Image (cartoon, rainbow, N blue to C red; front, side, top):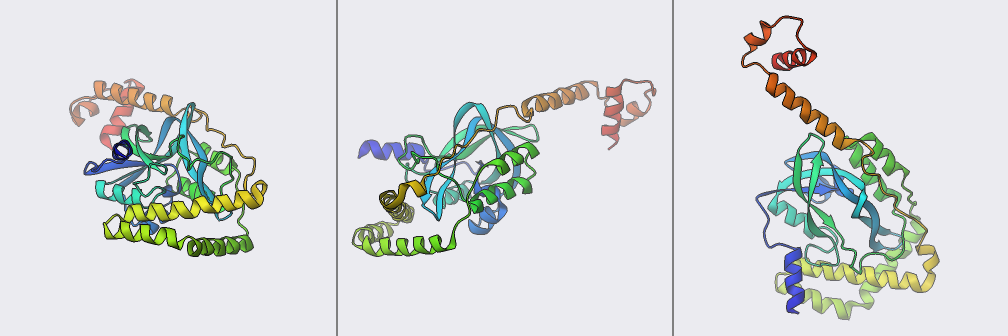
Amino acid sequence: MTKSNSTSESLFPSSYPDFVYNFSYGANMFPNVLSGRRKIHPIESIPGVLEGWQLTFDLRGIPALEPCFGNIKENPDAEVHGILHKMTGKQFKHLLTTEGGSGVNPNGYVPHKVNVHAYDGRIIEAYTLVVRRISPSISSHHVLPTARYMGLLRNGAAHHKIHSLYIEYLQSLPSFERSKPVMILVIFEILFLIILCSPIWIPVVIYYVCTNQKAQARAYFFSLIMVNSWRIYRFFGASRVFQPYYSAPFPLGSTNFKENTETFRTQVQIDEQTLPDTVTDILSEPNTSSPISQTTIQRKNS
């Protein structure tokens, strides 16, 4: 038990800095999800790219209703574009409690420090949410995400003006339309599971609530529902649940982002070295100056 507790503490720090950046690559890119559903209003939201990682859809959800959610895994030949949300440490802890794992279960999303290249040229240290490859929550079979879930990713990317090539990549990923009759059956199935497992989950949830561990109660309850839902679907029709699907990576350097950023920084350094001290010095220069000088004049005047 001691080893388990220490592992959990290392994955979920007890405190975070006053302000943190969260790199979001999934549904939280869409403002209606982050600000509307989770009531988190970031101080700023800027697009960025995480190199050496690949977008996947292998976190198990509820079959037929929302069978999988977004995740990332390391891949040196890939990159992931997303949004850097600047928020308070308190808001970030709240974000964790609303995600899979509720910020306490190491089998769900855990915060992971990464360095993200922001579109404005900065390299920002951020926390991103990752489901570890050793987690039992990772689906052993590839599962199609729903069209609703993929719509959140595409709309969020378009809203924050992520690179057009990456938006095309998101649009190329397959998804499936949920069937209303199947959704109704799944809802009845979940209600049946809740009633059937009530002698198990009610005492545990009451204990967590009474000991002021609401996040643990939430994580336990939803894990119980999802695990049993998958067991039922495996027993009655695994072939209908698991569909052949591979989340192809977005190739590293497809947008030439790194080269463009380095070119921009080089130009800024040249401008800083050649920039005269005052506006009058610029205006007194002859018109036959170099293109770089003409550029600096325009920037200085503006």
